[in-house]
Image 1: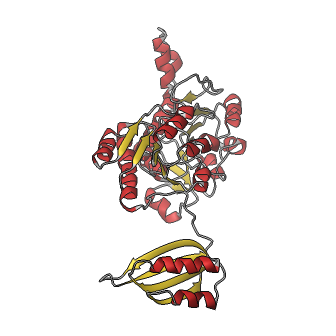
Image 2 (image 1 turned 90 degrees about the vertical axis):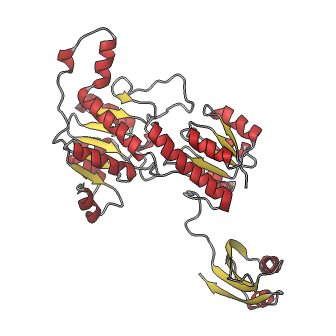
Image 3 (image 1 turned 120 degrees about the horizontal axis):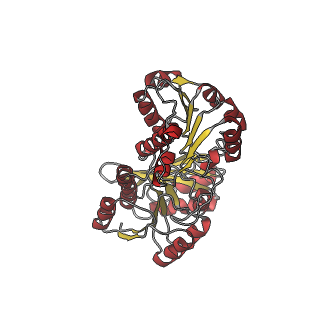
Length: 400
């Protein structure tokens, strides 16, 4: 089915062209944010909204009256009001793993910058001052230990590059097993605190969840050696920046982040940050490479095309892991017009709340089997009425 699609962030030219050639209406405005996004959703009333870093609040969802699907062209979805989308029956999907290389490359750029003070070198030269003496001291990375919090797609890209730099790796992840650690040639730590105790450089690559909020706090920072490096390219909430400021002042911690707390919602504007003068702050550009843009665009394109063709949402993040269904109604029936309408009328009469439903057609198209998961109290009378519906072959109910 043709869809109306609003793309509110930078997006692959090739992917946009493919959507247009497939018959979809595409509105592309990568500068949209805040009230401008609300106005655009109200004006264009798209079925699909595609964003990268742009925040999607409940007010935006309310403005899109026909909105069916929000695609985050990136890994996380913390910039989207997922709960609000779920209340409104709007699917939310993402593109996990497609920006892993780009984020890892930036993280390593920040690590090298911390070690060799590259931004300060450049700034001083641009000021017309030569300061070789001030910048000629660096520890180097070879033989230093890289600590990783999180070992998903980005974390694994970090490991590959760490080995190239001659750095041993100690890592923690809830899903990391001894077998996987051995395969990756990393040391598995029992806790984030154990990673900090062993690391000269600590890089953070966990998702933003209630469990990871403030993960890197005062206790963990105290476990790092004096003068350690800390790099955050995950999410601002994961790191307690006030504790970071204290560690910079008291113990010479060196800090770099691509996800500063309180970053502006728009693409441009005034910006002040308490750690901008004591650390390195980049502009949330971890996924902003041509390679990542194309990879993410290709995956977002796939999600949209599959949805348009089948109604199925790939990479959906806001579907219930388990429905509240208590029973499964299985109805074998002749493949005739109106038979399922009759069955559902009896389901409604019985007071059963349908949670999930599918209808599978047998070869030859003579018969089919409907599987209806519902929440309710079955009765023999209700089942008898369903079996009495014209063209029903046989119906059964079991508890699930």
